[in-house]
Image (cartoon, rainbow, N blue to C red; front, side, top):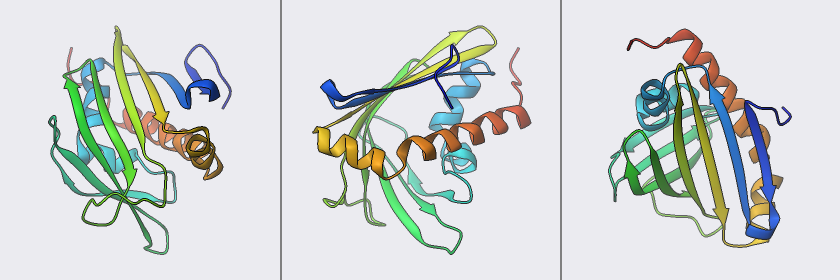
Length: 170
């Protein structure tokens, strides 16, 4: 998927970061819920044929979302998102890391900081992610793992979910 007015994926090597912007065909409240409610995240977060499976979520500053990406053979890759800042329906910031099934951060893979911002565009919502890594090597390692392709597959899952779950607020 290439950059367009509705989607951007920019690698900023000078700042060890990624900028991902996308406009979703749904109102802010619905998109916010899709990004912050584990029951909804489990329906779209993982690239097919993988599934996301939440073990626990405490969506509050200082809370965590502990989940596994479950592969077609049942294999699990655990991750944890530690919520650092939350401004409801505006933004949140997390430390994102691979972990074990108890949420203990793995030193084998890079960690990153995700700053996710939501902007209402009437019946649409723009989501902007700035993902920052500690080093150029960490950024490259995540890209080499297929992050861009996997994230884009998850984004398509979200668009499909939004199509199946239209806004109920008017």
